[in-house]
Length: 290
Image 1: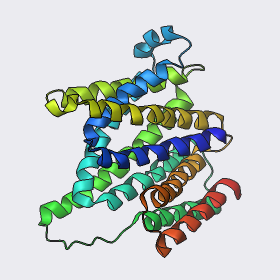
Image 2: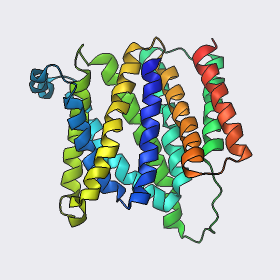
Image 3: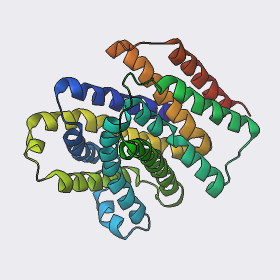
């Protein structure tokens, strides 16, 4: 349970730091590129056996790690476009609802239970995410059909890609990672993301500003642990992964909302309060009611 709490806490801190990027006048795309390098540096401090890195390219789980690393950087690029076209709230909902996909895969591939109570809990979880995250747009919609289609396409891509990343990560943990490889695998995912990120942005002069580097440090350290703690949660917590992912995401949603209220003075509407109450009820239903 400790690793789950740490996963929720570190993942929420990422959202807070990304919010601060605006105050720091940091281009999030550039800060995210450097963030992956500092994820790698952070992880190296915890590695006991560096010789294992030489075995990773021939390891049967490496293709999945390669896909994850590439997907991480691509998702952030799509998130940036989705935020501009579809809005922050819609993009946020798409990311947070992605827990549905690894939960479905866990039931399908690993035989996780799917009781009526769990289905009700997941349904409540979906509703709670909408209540907490949804904000009615204040602007009138004057875009043409192409823009409207993009408004649908980008959130859908985020929903699918985030969900498949979590499902892939869960699959690697269950089927491929040998004992003692946790840090090495996590580092490799981030290293691939860093290399792809640099390759995509190396020609941009704005990338090489010190504020992007320092922003990368601020994001990279908790980002490394958010993935590492999720891996440890999946490995050590005596719960099915179809239970862990909804609880993890709901915890992040609730703590992010509270952080927004405390740190950024965001409004706490009745809708948001109802969503948080429903989210807590969902966690109890999914995790503790059988």
